[in-house]
Image (cartoon, rainbow, N blue to C red; front, side, top):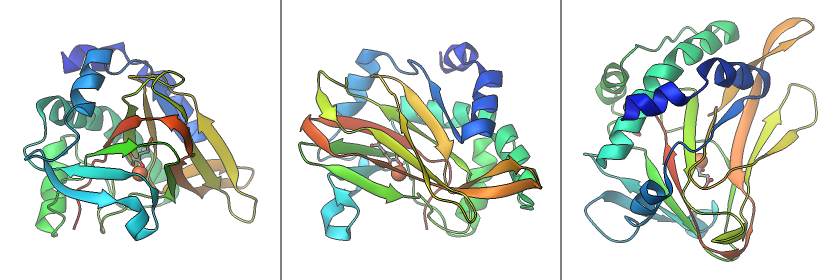
Length: 234
Ligand SMILES: O=C(O)CCC(=O)C(=O)O
Ligand SMILES: [Fe+2]
């Protein structure tokens, strides 16, 4: 089932878009009922290891919860399957950026690397925003080990469940002004994007550009997303 989902994705197109702009969309990665099922997990419960009120940390306004292990089955399967398709792209990027680290084919091997150096806590998270909420531009770095791509899936229906609340990315290029992008997402769509940096081909060869992501203010309604980060946290 997860494999059929992976087969539907135009990986050559995704890879080209990631190279060109640092992000790409997987249309309809989840069905509406799968979205509702995941969003419905929000609340107290054994599914989560921690609860973050964003305003308390200056992260914005809204809240999120990190899942605990074992992850819900669908999220576990997506995390494993997406990793195996993204790791060749991550390896190519690291090579182009002159970073020595290479990623194994299997997510479990990469997690072992994280866990061996003390990054043992799961990072997939469920976010919830209400009217006036937003997520400041940030990077999801949780220690020395970083997988350079991550995925966020929109679980709510724009225009119907909420207004505003757009997924925003910025790219900071060396000695240049910062470039913004708004990613158009429908319910069930996912965005894959660079966690911290990506290679950019310039006139003098490859250089690194820095990315950050966030969410613009919700004008009304309620918005849920699930974030799939492939490294674990210290
Ligand atoms: O709510 C969003 O769209 C952004 C979530 C986020 O920051 C993440 O998944 O890392
Ligand atoms: Fe994030």
